[in-house]
Image 1: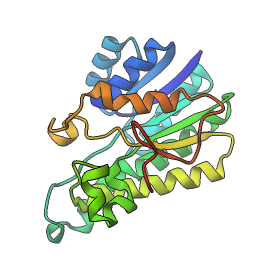
Image 2 (image 1 turned 180 degrees about the vertical axis):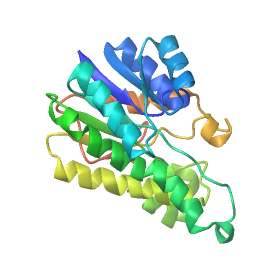
Image 3 (image 1 turned 45 degrees about the horizontal axis):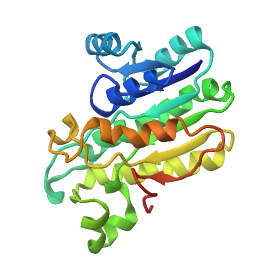
Image 4 (image 1 turned 30 degrees about the vertical axis):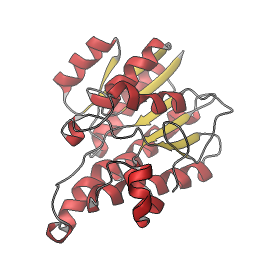
Length: 235
């Protein structure tokens, strides 16, 4: 039995990733910070509901303990929970605005990895998948010519872009520090979800494909990489 924990799984990419992994035989804990929505999503998926707010230490600890009691180990952790933050001009953004975005997109991943680490280390071939974005690529952001060729929906979002760049750095360092765990970042592409007001050019099914592929790559799969749907993304 493969046990998988997905944060932010009550809708969008998290929901679709859960659906696909359940089809592949995974036992999925579908994480949600809203109990009712989480239970409804889990029922629709055939998953196990997991109440988890990645911005709250105690919530993450309680979620990990619940999984520990039922499963004993976690084979795959998908850090999918994320927020876009305010769509304001750079000069109008405050430190508090960035802190709010980082609390979910960056510190949320740190809380979750740190708390679930013993459960991952108890598995035979554990993996962490950090759902990032091409907007977090320093190479893409630094090269105007790359904006359209690599990230068609490029936009200079100070909080979101920098938070995903930070998540990418976490991915590299976690992969180096925990060689027994495959740790990768993925770019689902410009997917129509609540995060972007459903303006994305591809479906959740299309966006989830790289998450699922990375989560199921097995013990010989890559680690410390930033993967897109068709090719690696430059850091």
